Length: 171
Image (cartoon, rainbow, N blue to C red; front, top):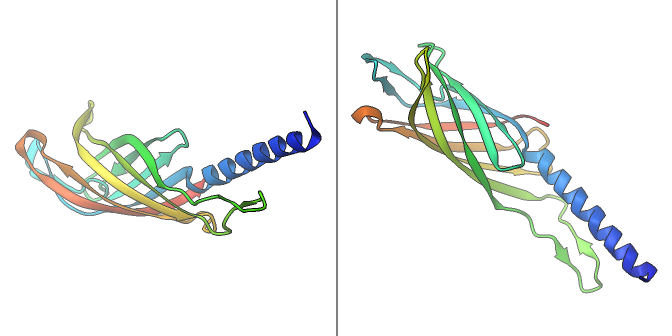
């Protein structure tokens, strides 16, 4: 193989590794935030709580996440988990001269969907679903934002609310 072909292969490999690792460190990490809304505890229908009043989740590059939520006013708590899909990645252009142009500020977005549970002291009870939308740029280390909603129709009791937050720290 000619040296120029070897050089091109090495440059492509370096660029791929560099872009991938730069991308991963932006969104991987712990995201946290707050939520609104009211839900009934079906074990005691006079007891209401706010799922996702405070929440924290760990996002990994493999498309999965898991986290915990808590309502500090009632002490109710639970878990949530699901998958997420990157919906927007910045373009990397090949210029007419064959060089590669990577924008200095790259914007990303993702959507996640999953289920949440209520811990009744004995087990995690599946209680509902939620969706979150994430957005971040590579020039916001430790930054980014998320928003979404949660819902339940557990045992015929309906509840819904909102979720907001941002990245607390990256890996």
